[in-house]
Amino acid sequence: MNDQTPAARLRALLDRPGTVALPGVFDALSARLAEQAGFDAVFTSGFGIAATTLGVPDMGMLTMAENVDRVDSLTSSIDVPLVADMDTGYGSVLNVRRTMHECVDAGVAGVILEDQAWPKKCGHMDEKRVVDEEEHVRRIRAAADVRAERDSEFVIVGRTDAREPLDLDEAIQRGHAYAEAGADVVFVEAPESRAELERIANAFDVPTFANMVEGGKTPVLPADELESIGFDIAVYPLTALFAATQAMQDAYETLATERTTAGVEGVSFEEFEEVVDAAGYREQEARYAAMETDADERME
Image (cartoon, rainbow, N blue to C red):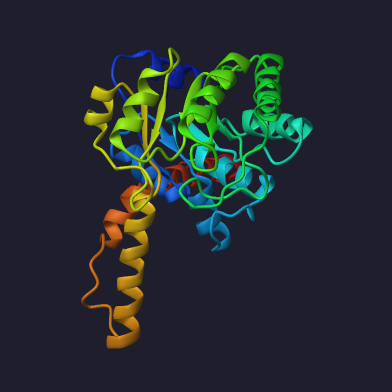
């Protein structure tokens, strides 16, 4: 167990040379698996939480309470820092402030706030709409104010989705404005080429954030290549979700068509117990059982 807060540990990761690669997680089990794989921090996406909580696309149907509730269960299940996608902050600057307070209470190390208009959409979908730059500047300032008021160190990632509805020049301009308003990291969503990625990485003095979505608008590059370009954070938000979806589809289709699970591959019962630390909970149970036995003996 590290004595530093999750936010302080995340800031320490950002201060290290190189690119921090973050896997996307969407529930407590996926978060534990990512931590056990050796990642120093993890990341949630609104896409993944909307899909696994509600079974719906990332099109503004997830509420703040639903998102924070899921994020809280993740931070409770792992020791590494978690960066949470908080969409637009869910309303006015007052809503943004409440969202940030909820995130601090949930132990979040970093938050992403985007400049889309509500209802927001996945950043790699078409026909997105963005608010005026100044409106999102106010959102970022509200988040920074809560950070100061709570004496927190949580990292603010200022995201702009202006590349698709406007252009890359506008997106870069907005990124600078968000950094000046208090964002620690700039995230220009959905660049459409390696050349655009290079331009974004070179446009800012603050840390930059690259989002690698399989099948999305941005070319998916290895973290080492993104490091050579100059990005400080590289996230792969949907890789595990897509892989898990394929595995579950295969398992259910096998049972439905063949009426047996004999051909389904997966971890063993014992291996799964290791993932969720069943042995640790049995030890706790046994310790309390021994205390009860000792108490009974003293009463005899």
